[in-house]
Length: 284
Image 1 (cartoon, rainbow, N blue to C red):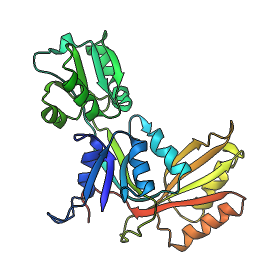
Image 2: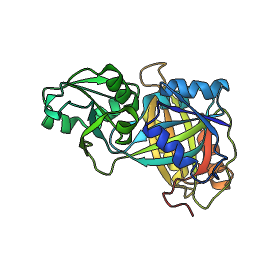
Image 3: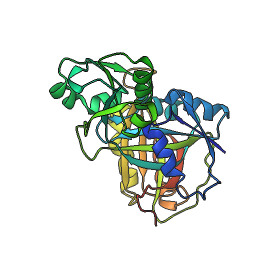
């Protein structure tokens, strides 16, 4: 099996992949391939170049990742696993560059957003430049060797790309976490556990927000806990939305099946995106 992931080496996504595979015995780890963007990694899984893709879904500070949401909404992809990764950022630059000399900071848009308070306070005159990932930003800065350029990335990226760490703890929230998911064209029927999660997509179409309370109530009346609710534009027209739901139940449980049927009875389409174990930092 081969996993696609947002590269290059040193991304938080690579850390997520390693966490996801931490229970695999040494020597039996599946192969993994870095891709330059989230859409590229997901497309590799969709086309069958890789069996699955590990991609970021949401961050506790900056919210959802649009590229992942778009693919889940528009393509027949399924979630088979999730993993959470604590996120902390470091400012890094080539040897000889001091923090006060930095005039251009490279990073992923989500990282720049999480570090904007620090940048505004410590480097008020610095311009920002976006990159496909935090590790890509570190690699770009290392390869360019431009004076006064720095990157915001995970601290290990400095060692990977020969950079020196100038500052740590840049993020707005010390406890920031990103949730990653393993996505594939087919649902793999992961082994059931005591802590299950099911992801669903409800097509509201032009019904818009008016039906959202009714949809949510179908689950609540059957005692099904909703752990994530996210509306997402379909792109077809103003006011046309899909509704992403995470519920703490397995697709094979009767209450969840009844709730889905009740939503469909309202004339709405419900698409199953996958049932999988809820992430726990200390499984078992």
